[in-house]
Length: 506
Image (cartoon, rainbow, N blue to C red; front, top):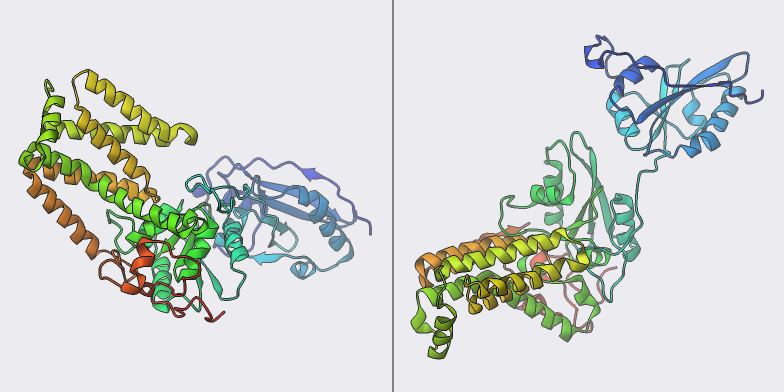
């Protein structure tokens, strides 16, 4: 019998009362009808329920298609779904086994129905049999892989993670086409039901670390996961840690390199960043671009970032302690220069330091909100221009402006933006202690930071390793970049199954 689509009805007006006020004895599982489906998606204007009559003119079958606009490829409905359904219904007497004749999945549970709808699936409801089926026609909004905005690629690849989990996993799989690369998927969030991917290399990563990651992912109880930052805090050893205990990246090449070293990668759906662990302080100082430059240049860059970390943390407090309390420790020519620069200033040295550091922090925050091309320029140049104006107005000294500018530039050398925020906060702690107790306060605050860092761990890996406890086999590779010819071992602090990178298992 020929295919004859008689009519396509507009969506009937939904009942005026809220479905919560409608009394029904039906359970979440059981026969479905159009009224019950309309009540289920009463407040979802983007969910459409279209009715069709397919089959023969003598005995047409009523079919209802339910889908979410924007998430479903609606063009396939008219080009593929309706003709196939019409042909099957015209030639078949029984509709019970419709899922076997077409690529459909039968649904009964209300939670499964909601999950399929908002995943972009097309639901097919057959009125005669009161059965509901699902067909994969999902086409959610997505963008093509492009260069990461947070990690600029100079010599490395230009593709970066996107908001689609499958695409992100594929970008890593393209670089590591091996069956040893394991991909486990979890569902997190009672409302969002977000997909979370755990990736690791089976014959390299420590089994104890991977099992710990699994348990932490399974224990997460939250209504919705909207980004990798939430997930990072929930699986970290200490959620309130001042320093980031996990690294993140928007570049699949860096994620693949971390997997080869024996680390794991966690990716949340709708997030363009991947979480890398276990992380320590030396890992946060490394850049993805280090792998694409000569080892001597990359090693210099790592050492400069380490110096930048120390300067951005301690320089303002150290300078304040010297100039306000321990002037006798400064050479006399420099004391004369400082004294001349402070003539006529209304503010004491510690308060002036707090004001200048806060001003540079304001410019840094403003620079992050501006377009990338002008953001850092505004943060540095703007701070210097305003600082120069403050000097001319007699509100700040030239020496402190130099100290503040060096501190700001040192913080720009850091790669991990979470670490930059931690450094900015702890800098005030050191500055306040130095302003109150002088050099004693500076030493106390420095020792407190070192003790705090030494107590941190990331999945059993000490945060200061391999510097403390010192591991000589990993020491040089932690603070420098080895040449490709000398890289033969994986970091022992990660306890890898296969510690050899040359001639090991494949």
